[in-house]
Image 1: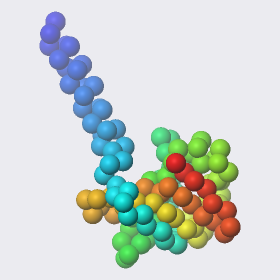
Image 2: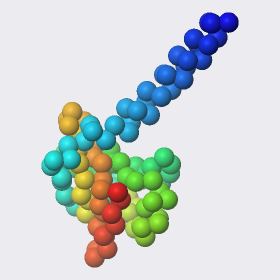
Image 3: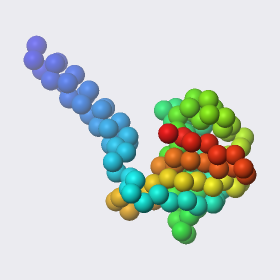
Length: 116
């Protein structure tokens, strides 16, 4: 009887690890906000949050956006940030040097959308 419980507990613990690692916001350096103007090369508009890719500093970067429901509630549409459209992003890069940025603010023309 103990063996099935051990297997279930181990399985549950292993599935939780990627979620905890993925949403570890402390891995981003919030003491040094970065603002840049770029365009996405790819965009994923889905849950648990949107994501994109872009070229910056000669490298391909992963861009972590807010949940799509939050972006839409704040007036941001997928069409406004489709790949190829220029956007101004403010956010934080990872502390470990990985090419990933968590975006806090998107500016399109005169429109500013806070993603927090």
